[in-house]
Length: 220
Ligand SMILES: NC(=O)c1ccc[n+]([C@@H]2O[C@H](COP(=O)([O-])OP(=O)(O)OC[C@H]3O[C@@H](n4cnc5c(N)ncnc54)[C@H](O)[C@@H]3O)[C@@H](O)[C@H]2O)c1
Image (cartoon, rainbow, N blue to C red; front, side, top):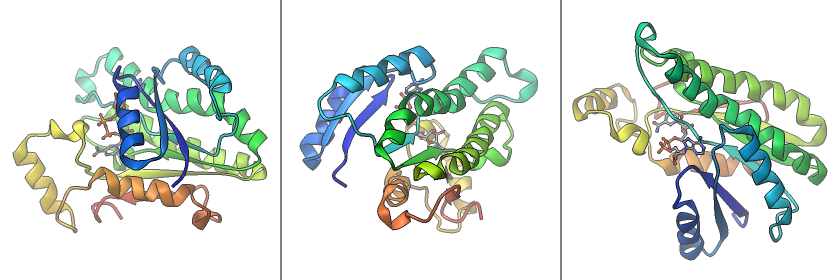
């Protein structure tokens, strides 16, 4: 879409992956290793971008990092609760808070927050559901607060998407899941990415505060 992209991940090879994307697509993409659950680390990242070439302007933020550490609530440890809330919800505060001034200065922008259909409640995911429901409250509030700066804020709730997060699900559960999906297949990362692309584009200029499912009809 012509954006200059900074990809952020905990993984040490993020810059290599970013360069691979650059090489394959001809777009400009760099990677930075940062723990988005760590406020100070994100603050440092934001200041370092001020100095990086051609990153004075910010059009788009996609808050996508997430982990799940599932367990029934009775067995859930404080550490499981804390980690999931920090990565899946606090990260949205950390990133948006530290980068927003640049977007406000820019005079327009679009933020897309990745929630999950689990926000409605899912057995074994009290931590994840609480974080993902929080993402929706944050999205709707920011959409109201930031409209005056011409910044739109929307959330996406993916259903069952084929990524490393879901590859750990045993085959028999996966098959049972697919039976419940009206489109009878798991989603691909591109199914979600295509909606991100639309939401940040000018075609979505009148859409803000929305929560959109990408679930093959599993959630309506
Ligand atoms: N895969 C699904 O079916 C599904 C469904 C609903 C929602 N989601 C959401 O989609 C988003 C992407 O998930 P995915 O399926 O691609 O998972 P994934 O595990 O494949 O990718 C998540 C990425 O986040 C990174 N990450 C984790 N903690 C981080 C941190 N503290 N700082 C920086 N990076 C960190 C990981 O290294 C990883 O590259 C998540 O928010 C997830 O909750 C996924």
